[in-house]
Length: 515
Image 1 (cartoon, one colour):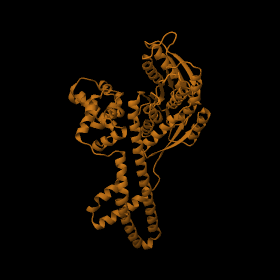
Image 2 (cartoon, helix red, strand yellow):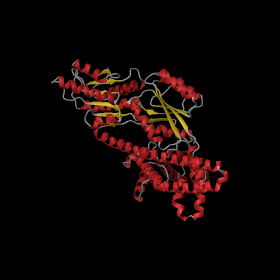
Image 3 (cartoon, helix red, strand yellow):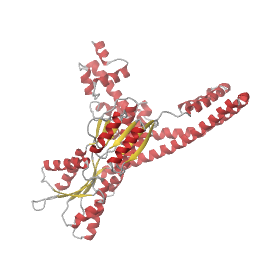
Image 4 (cartoon, one colour):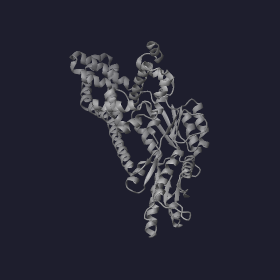
């Protein structure tokens, strides 16, 4: 594709004869490009098809636009561990290049994941863990910490409610799938945090909302048991609980005018419910499908990767929900523009490839008429040149703009450098944190820094750390190990590799030279 850009921009400098020669070579090049390109086939095994995992799938598909060498094949087990094991075995038989598995449960899926791993297929376990260490990488949230955030929200609610021994603060917990590991950990984290609080322990009632949260909460409210707050283990159940409370209030005049309600996950529908005042908050449980694809790319290409990544979780109120909704909707808009542009460009490109294959075949079959066919080929390729210049290039330029090739000024990069340099020793600092400080989405940040520096944001941060490391080597007595840990390289070997790649020599050589 870049060759086409170069040809169109440089064609005016060519002589008439050299243009014809270049067009002939371009025709053969386009025909050669029509051969199938290497593709990584990634099998995705989802235990459920709920809103949270649909969000994960959309995030993976969006990130996949930046990795055209990957193709996803998704299968859903609908809550059946047996079916999910069978689906994983079918992926093994098909010899996919990688597996991404979101297990239904650890006990039922550990052996299936291990079979894939032992068969030489890299496996990324997402969301819920499996037993043992026979997997390639794990990426998911900490459900115990989710429970602690739930307790923090409850503490805020009960701090303004007077409770007595006769009438303690009452909390209704709307649970999901019975016996699920995430739910058990969340409940444990919430209860242990509440017990450690300086406030009196609330009374906790539980109902199961796995099949019908609205009916479960409605039945509980009919008992007349006073409730001061409701926590639900996902946003959809929280919205259904709010609907049940609103209906009960219309039937029982003396019922409290409002009950604070929170959910878990931070999905789009949950954020809208917070913005609209239906529920009061949520605890994010990020799905981060984009990180799954990024980790898959690192594994498949042999790059260093983090084996166990725990995604932090946050409380979201109405103000934060509005910001997250705006970012989400902008991302969806950008992705839609990108998809349409890519579809148009791919369709046009395929037609041009097909035309050129037919032309080349005609040249071979009509060897005795080579000169006549060659003339026709040149005429047709001139037409292709016009089509590329007038039709394809504007669409390709739209794609460039959609994925982020806008211009930057020195003031912006000075701000990026200032923030990056201030957090070089922070192991939690990365692209997400840099984007948050600049009030930019990940896609916007990638576009702007890539345009100016030619580097991805993470590579730019690594460059700043390497420059700081070089300064420390030259001006301090710190060891290579101390410097690598200070600047968050985790292992001295990784630090030495990146240092040599950047400066052309090992850090130990720099130390010897200084001495």
